[in-house]
Image: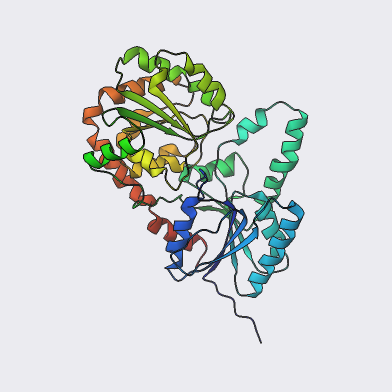
Length: 391
């Protein structure tokens, strides 16, 4: 009997999942839920997890390992799982970032007609190439760069976004143009929303925050790639030199290699009691911090398609950021005055001061951000997803 393959089928591979994680993989569950309502047959394959995600639909999940098993075991199990799913009629494999899963899927495609889609986005290649030649860099090359180079030439489709990242990956990273496909990150606009004034104050109280403070929010990693220490604490020093208001708070959420150094540098500053480091917060509840904040700020030297920007826009937050990666593609025109060059730390600090001083006249920015983010709603992006997979 001749096998019938289902073109409207998808194997989505996540390298890890946990509802307690601060990673953005939590967003993927909602995207797959929406896709499954659009006549797409989906199986979610998770390399490693400590729990099974909850789905509203009858979406099937396969877990390769619930523990940190040996990578060879996981590779073989994933390899044979993909071949079995192919023989069950699945034809498309989509992997987000994980080189391990992508190489496995490419290997399986040699003995099947699986089409492999690999998603990657990030302007980190120049930073990596500038690092001195050490044993650590040699190990990094074989673990990270070499697998990536193999993938970019052997994968069926290389998926990225937003628009400027297509040019970046072709011109800087040398991904063949015929392989490149555009796909947006998505945002659940029902989860990231706008609260009434009273509900905002109530939520602040439940989070241990002063209901009457003006809150600047940062959610991201403190890392050498993003050059976090270039901006911090310099921009805070400049801000509090010009702003003498004890009802201003800066909330930092996230971790990373540079966090301890930055946090230590602020301890003895005169404004230290106005700066709160919250550490990692699970993405499943991170919307609470956006919804109680007044401005989102994103000092970064390297970026790609930051979901944090989308999360802030969905909550109608004005944004102070740099022009790193694809950020300028995402933000609407009213936000342009608050985007500084990645090397212009003084301009970034001035923009923080300016947006605070104009805090009572930001309604147009709030509205434009909320309207612009609809372009990245899960419903819209799920249709983009179907289009690039031709399903």
